[in-house]
Image (tube, rainbow, N blue to C red; front, side):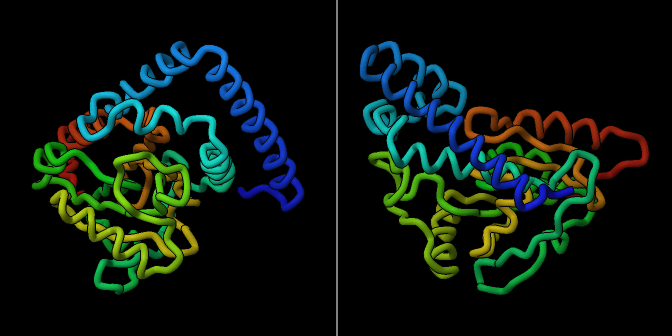
Length: 244
């Protein structure tokens, strides 16, 4: 059940103050103890693979933490979670999405038995291993590290999406990574991103229209192996033949 208008804005105000304090403390800590702060950020980066990504050196992304762009992005993510309507065991929000051809459709159009819905991508090996028993879908949402937002150096050159065409063009870059599953984009109202609290990335497993797995928010808690465990369990359950 959604929050009242006043309750929503009071919660937003509380989150604004909380994020402001966190960023201010982090900024001061980084200024006073730069090496220690860098070690802490790199330790978090190990969880996402960022620290091991050969395309990025620490200097490409560590200094961006606790910047004003970082503040606004974290605030957007925290505020978005107040609109989360995707509950474990509940009906999956049947949001409108757009195929790369420009045709509108709904998330449930892709559901046969189960479905994995992801804000970004899934590991190719995971898709391969369950290709015969599950249907996978990638929902491309707003860009987490746009060049005119919280940007990393040496990253893809994508600005914040101002139109659906911008978003569709950016999503086509995913095809170069051979996702091996359908790719659709969120609407410019960011309905999927909001109702699934997907920013910056999140994984779901949906079976017969209901959410049977809700991953923690990425990138720090993004875990495709949890999806693997859920799918393996569903595949071996009596009477279940997942078609995701």
